[in-house]
Every structure is written in C-alpha cells, then in structure tokens.
Length: 80
Image (cartoon, rainbow, N blue to C red; front, side):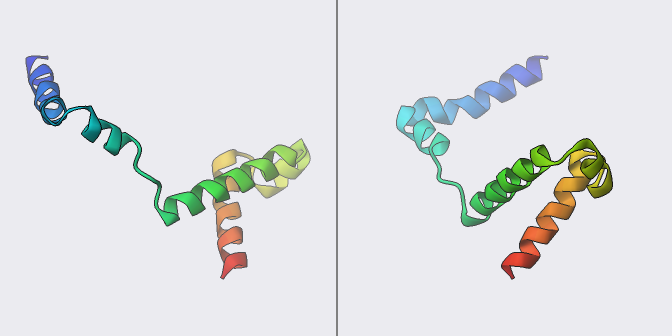
C-alpha cells in the first residue's frame, strides 16, 4: 500500500512542478490518424449492429466482439 502511494506521488510530481500547462497539454493531445479511423469504424459498425434484428445478429455473429471483428475486416477491405 505504501509503495502504491509513493509511486503515485512520484508520477504526479513532474506534473506539479511543470504546472497545469503540461497536464492540459497531455490531456488535450489530438488523436492520431489511425485512432481517428478506428473510432470511425467502431461508430459505423455499432450503427450497423444496432440496426440488425435478433435473427440477423445470430447469422452475422451472435455477440458484439465477433460481429465487430468481421465488420472491421469488411470496412478495411472496402477502403483498400
């Protein structure tokens, strides 16, 4: 427990010394092109998943992770 407190304090110390500008800069970092593309694919696949009926979901992949994996592959192939 004491080690966790010491580690947390050691991690926070540079942010306290540098001031709030460094903390804000780290928090406001823009997503990369790859991260933006991944978020867009997740939004598209999520919208498609919500639009499927129960029987269609069973045929496509009964659970979200299986469907999402297939959907991402499909979207990447369409882009290429």
